[in-house]
Amino acid sequence: MSGTVGSSARFRALTFIQAALIVGSLFAPMASLGADPTASPDPTPSATAPATTPDPTATPDPTATPDVTPEPAPTDPAPTDPAPTPDPTVDPTSAPTPAPTADPGPSAPYIVTFAVGTSAVTQAAILAAAGATSDQAIPQLRMHAVSLTSAGVAALSNENAVIRIDTDLVRAAEAAPGDPGYPTQWALSKIGWDLAFGSVTPTGSAVVALLDTGVDASHPDLAGSLVGGTSVLDG
Image (cartoon, rainbow, N blue to C red; front, side, top):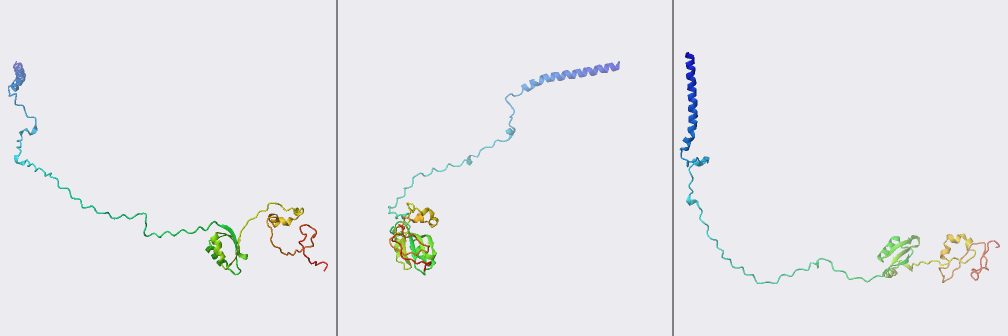
């Protein structure tokens, strides 16, 4: 019986505490509304710090207005004559242009023959001094086929070592020999007789000895051209 009464008492006490908590929670908002609604909390964390009063003496004084008076323009000096500019095309150190020489004229082929005893070195020096261009030479006969201008011919004419200056001419045969026996003369073509025949007209005469067994004195080519000979067979 006593255990039942104690349990009922505890139950009523717990019920009363719960009811008090519920009633207290209902009246808590009314208490907050009764406070000053204009006193809103300052959300800024530094609201409690004292405000810094600006120092009125810290403001810098305004600078003085700059003087904008223009300075007088400088007076230009009196114009002077400029120094003459040297001509860039004239080089004072260059050598003077030599006077033009006379045109020696075109070159032509010549055959120059030197005197007996003239060395090959002397021959070459004389030709070079005359401006000759040696094309061919026969050292044994001291003959040179060269190209010379008229001035070069005049220079060589004054050389004691030069005995002849001949114009080098080229001749071409225009016809074959008319001798009916020419085809049988095999040696004539070997010495180039067909190239020389009819291209040269001799102006002089010479006596030539022929070592042969005899000739036909009645042949028209030999008529009037033979002289007395000697036979070694009939004494």
